[in-house]
Amino acid sequence: MKDKVVVVTGAGNGIGRATALLLARMGAKVVVNDLGGSGSGEGSDAGPALMVVREIEAAGGQAVADTHSVASWEGAAAIIKTALERFGRIDGVVNNAGILRDRIFHKMNEQEWRAVLDVHLSGSFYVSRAAAAHFKDQGSGNFVHMTSTSGLIGNFGQANYAAAKLGIAALSKSIALDMARFGVRSNCIAPFAWSRLIGTLPSETDAEKQRLARMQSMKPEQVASVAAFLVSDQSEEINGQILAVRGNEVMVMSQPRPVASVHSATGWDQESLLSHALPALKRAFTPLDRSSDVFSWDPV
Image (cartoon, rainbow, N blue to C red; front, side, top):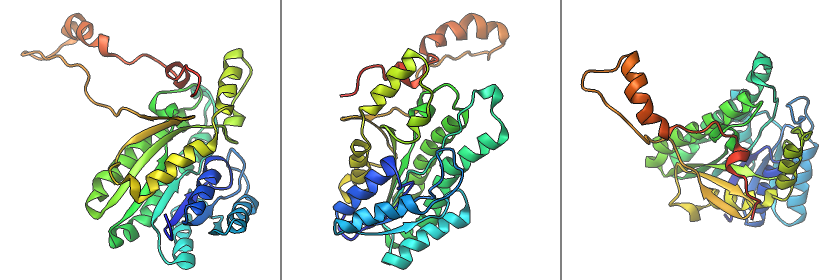
């Protein structure tokens, strides 16, 4: 990573901060982007980004703070411009910025929906798109996007977040397909780690308390190691993939593929769908699981 220039969004806290610090220790020049808002996206404060920059510089690294919002085309362009003006190039983007506005679906309002999609999904697109032309011209570049098992598997009260995070997986795959010919890669991480956002989740029932206790045992630094590896040239064999990082475990997540099929020479009607197609297909149906149902064991 020596002398590579990497933008890390949402780098003032948690996984973003850990990733920025690690990349700097590896020799990268880091744009520490963080709006400095609350966990739900309100307000702004340059303090978190500046604190990370000071920490990097105190250790002998190079970094610059940026407080533009990822949630607009103009803000994202300004983030990449910061990298170009300060360091002269851009080699990697870690799309980590995020907010939460959880609400059970039948009570979720338009603002809660839009705010989360604007930061997670649109923000990942805007920042990636702003860097894409530079990656294409230089024939290299890496994107690392943070998805979530809330989207890949499911969770209660997170329709906005889940939709955005599953959309990010599709966005990453599309970038990988479109830009592989230019030497550009794009991958996703579904992280498990204690963070400021995780700390806002409810912990009223015994199950919720156990889940949060389990999350507290998983550190942002464990995710940062994989993020830094993916953004480096050492991971050149990895493109268009979704990796889950859970403590010391690294897993490849499946991507949708056909798992069962039936056919009828005469086509289907309501009766034949009920009597023949359903019995044949239902063995392959996906259970109505939540992330905690699938990942039920203690982290390693």
